[in-house]
Image (cartoon, rainbow, N blue to C red; front, side, top):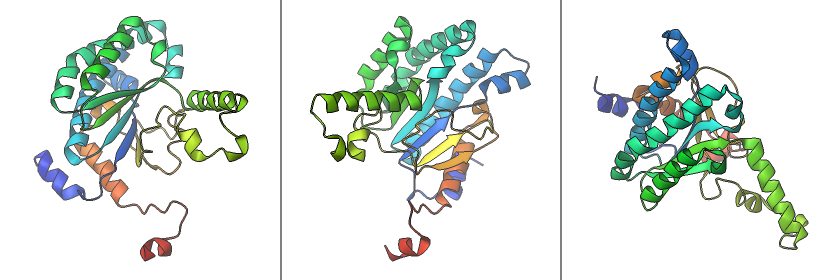
Length: 252
């Protein structure tokens, strides 16, 4: 069945999550299962990124956050890290024309200064090219860690308090949100993790307080349009209460 027909039969177009975040796990295990080197799994995963980005734009998702390279990933073997940084640069250069054509705006969270110069400059070029686009906001988490983000936020607020810019007793959630990497981005409605692991892995720790979490055993290189639609359909079957009870929601 064509994917368009599958889409119409699976999801409700009037209840699309505004922000989907994805922990793209399973590239290495996919490669091992196919007797391939780990980098082959990462390369295959690029096809999933392309497919999911396009489908999110098609169905009306406003923000798509992809856990691309965590702050802990620097501890991987140097050969793999080098290959991943090279793949990041090549992918941005190859995909940026189509992203721009499709009105996708590229954004990043994390510490871009940690990236090698060529990868960082390539990302900065991509950000510049797409900065005025008004379609899907594609957010790549690069050298990102949720704890590190919260620590950076706390340090910034502490400095402001010392300088008399903030009164600690009047500190609000809004003050905290404004210091996060995602200050101008709504919290994820749906967090997807591929590869079957049941953990958050230091991703968007503040932001996912009320996100619906969907875990699939499907490895990231095999996660495509149909799998995304299944996740969205599962999201749509849930009742989001945000601390209330069902009866209260019925009254609104």
